[in-house]
Image (cartoon, rainbow, N blue to C red; front, top):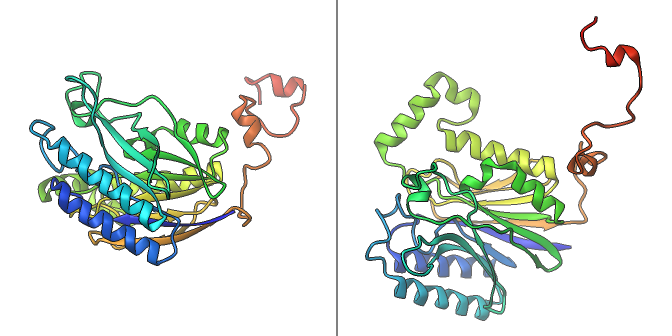
Length: 305
């Protein structure tokens, strides 16, 4: 099966209506370039609490709902799927979910993925957990017979999530990030933490740039799946949106700190190098070796040369 993916980035901000203008504009670009689905960054429509704005106090939920419905209406008009990062309001004083809305090319909300691993510690008072409630479910859906899944930013630190999607037959993951709006002083500290002499040999100067991209190489190659990696381009955005094929090779990327749409093709009939194909399923069942084990006294004795 074959689909075309538009991986979108723009400078996500606190202004919902401004974010929406970017979303609608890039949806039109995606459609004009033959895409079946447009994939947006974490909190692309709502903005990201703690980074783009301080908190959800006085947040305009009515405006967010209005802008969301308008995006769904355009999806229906364009006959375009969208994977839309936003915030999902809960009841009472419960913190909202950090979510991806999965919208069909009929403009219908098919599913919602809620970020399962929100960054922060057990106090719930810092990073993501100061603003968001974690989710508890995977999201598996099909676009033109390609099995898809969704993840958000810090989820990348948990390879078990990719393994579970592989177990569920997922071929393409939409992984939305928000590694943007880093203030100059914070960026300086991040770069100093890595160390200037290590920037070149690590192909990056900050941990987001180094670890997020490396994890996507590994997740694609270890699980034999395509990954669309969308990010905010709000300066400093650490790294630009990119797309990875099942052997871990990046097939395209945008420019840092610049709005854009990256067009990539997923063709499940293509064959790429897959070094773990023969034994991956067995490993997933908890059998941690390849080939046939032997019974040999010199193998059993691990304290002798």
